[in-house]
Length: 194
Length: 216
Image (cartoon, rainbow over all chains, first blue to last red; front, side, top):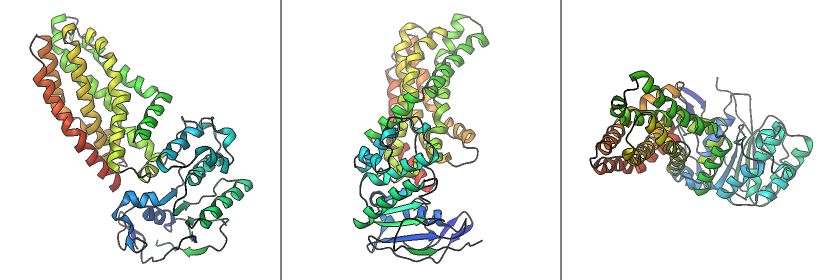
């Protein structure tokens, strides 16, 4: 696979596979293309070269079907400050299914459900974004530095979420600079092209 | 799609400033005309149809550049594109939401604006209809413009330059319809032509906008 942004090659000659229940950590210096790789895997950035295969078939042939297989956790939390915590989550639950109150429970935000999202701290916002992952099971999680801003207890709860996802056969790809609660994860190191 | 529309309306209710700004802008622009051309009633009535249309379209244009900009900045747009909705569905809902939160409120203010421009009361009904159709047309082509200019550095300036020329037919037919009603002629043919514009924009604009969002 290769991805270009404008005239610049972000990465090229990359090839890897992830099996069900497996975890792959993307590491490498800033600007190595970790986030871009995740966006490309989600189908949000076009591939300049190569192919993205899902069980041997071209994954991007049907983008809507590909989107239904994955959850993407980006740096931006995708929260509307004017909506309450529960309202923010309820919208995504209406798209993906799942029980918003159980998902809030999983990230320990249930007591804040009726608070506007603008009142949350950075770590709490991140936990609300993580609650989207807890909504409904899906095959692949693409996580971009998922543990940024989380306290120790939240990282432990996030570890539980990850373990449950993987034991149900879900795969995880996570870009990170810090250790994540992903036992037995393989590592894919991206080197800067600059 | 219903859930997305409900979210759009809920957000508009939590942040009513955008809707209010568009309505006030519309009323202020129409209020400027009597100051500019003098208070002669015949002169104002002659200007009223075109002034109403132009003011309404400019007012509806105001919140357009934030239509996708706000969603792109906070990461919601990526999530929406991965939510199982196609680009066409997302942009169609966005356009409908834009009309419901800016175009439709303008209709409520139309009688006030019409009175300030000395538009005959007999033409108010047609004026509301013509403005409704014209703003609906603008919401859809404007959504396509907003999707195209998303990420452009001067998107806010580019958007009106892109969209307003396309809105000229809506101004022509809308103003002609109101003028016909004001002088006691049938306005139906003009409204039907406006309706045809809307009928063309309704499927085509989301198609273009959806493709533009994907290509970003």
